[in-house]
Image (cartoon, rainbow, N blue to C red; front, side, top):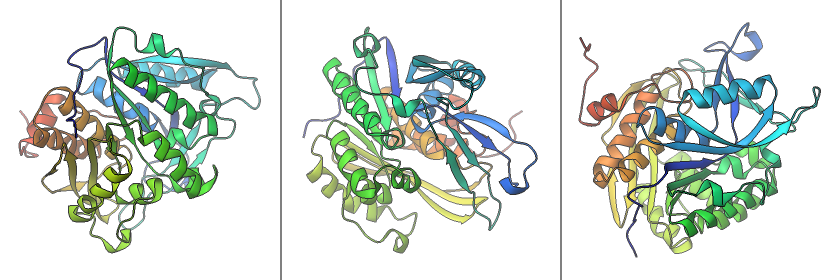
Length: 359
């Protein structure tokens, strides 16, 4: 198997393809009792390039849909504030029914009460995106080092999955490394053909992927890879995940890296956290730490961003995994879906830093 080779330089370090959403967050109050909400701009694919730009100081872009109305303007402003360049297919809003920028509703839960997530993706602009909508020649002009997408965008419609395949093919033709986060979401796929369609769609996409992110459940439900009963496996046991790698590679021999976070939920507010990655034939396991969680949404995207940064920066595989682990851990200590950490804080925690006050 050929090792992972990453272009050393380019006009953009990383480009993601995915849907932009706004998440309404009432904090620890359940929605049925909420009186106000914070608004976070998010999207599994966007979060990765936002983290790479804001924390890791890379040149990134998001390819997505944008609706010309106030919610779209709010989202575009936050994208720009994170240092991410928007490459948009634009839609006009009719003033009544859309098309819309999707809304995600997610309280944070607390203690023994878990977070609750639900969606309004009715008439979502991003779901209308289709092959031919994006000028990939322009996107990859000047060289792109890394191209990323994910299973959330793939689930939105038949055409979004085909657009990912088109983007992956263009990325490989241009010399970019490709990554994909399976991010299997039962509710989204249930509304889009179910698990049978998810497996067929995601397998086609992963045939074009170098770096795959996904836990045991993602691999089983999203890619149809045989594995242990997820509920019977400790969240911190890397053995079950490592044991599935050979079956992933038999199915997708192009893949060179497979990675995931390991999380044991003691309560909504208290987690044990680690990570594991298989890179070019060897397994690397991060340390385990205990997290006092402020907002768990985006922790996995934080891990992916830190791992990708480590690989892009030429760090050793072990250090790349530790950077992902450290950044994902820090991200759970902030409200919202994207980073507020600095690269120096991530490196310090990856080296074993403490929570002592910094004066």
